Image 1 (spheres, rainbow, N blue to C red):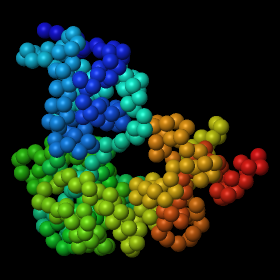
Image 2: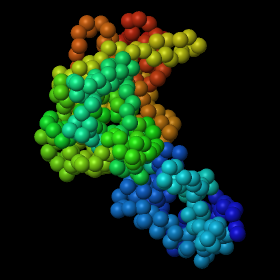
Image 3: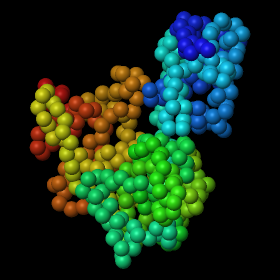
Length: 401
């Protein structure tokens, strides 16, 4: 049995990529998509979703078809499985299992050949992040808010207030596709008010845990790190009535199962609706009206405190700020993508113009009025003294030396 992975040189890959009888446009699309991803790896399912094909079989079929065409023209040794069948995908990829998913990794030789053939120019990096809708039905699990029991949700909200996050375990129907880093929204179902009242990100692989009812059965779950958590009994939530428009109307917001995929075409509209809701409603511990916390950066060997607020790291506020101002530094005009190429794509810090501690009252941040993109160096310099410099003051220092 052959166990050695086929070793195709960069030079042979260049020859193959330039052979239009072998490589079809869809084959190149698979390679170029994988090239654009973090670590240049993904499952066939994720590749199909990004490209827009119905399922992973389209990816697998294209890879196998290309491998067969190559074998007719080039003498390449194949890897043989224990059952006697032969692999074709490992002409192009190495790989490994991540949970139940097999992850393709673009071979370095193929990566270099794509670059040499000019097939990677103008390719923008892509981040794989899906969004999922989880549910809570108080009629089935009342302990979270039942005043006759321990009000766990209030403790969770207090933890979020004090630490900036709270991590909870939730059942997940889409356990075969969900990944750490995916976006998570939590909706109340079963009784009014119905709608979204929490958001965060998935921070674990799916795992089996006992059913919430205490029944002798296990269900797949994930850990979710929530950045926003509201108590539907005490404060407003984003009700389903506000989600019945545009692409949002195509999604079921009160499903029977927890942890279902949110339609990709609805995600941006959902983020925008959720952002506006949080920014404009009277919500306790809103991510847009929080007191400051502090991170430490190091400037020329000296520790410098850089004061940040939670919403500066909030994806809604950051997205709105950068959509308006772009990714060049507001102080020195440095642009990471122009200098570093694709490595610097969409990299920048976001700076808050006003010290929250000096306002002496709660207020809601406006991402366009209150936030600006700045490079890490200028961000550190702005905060090098107390009170921080203004952007114009730092510009004058740079101009006048």
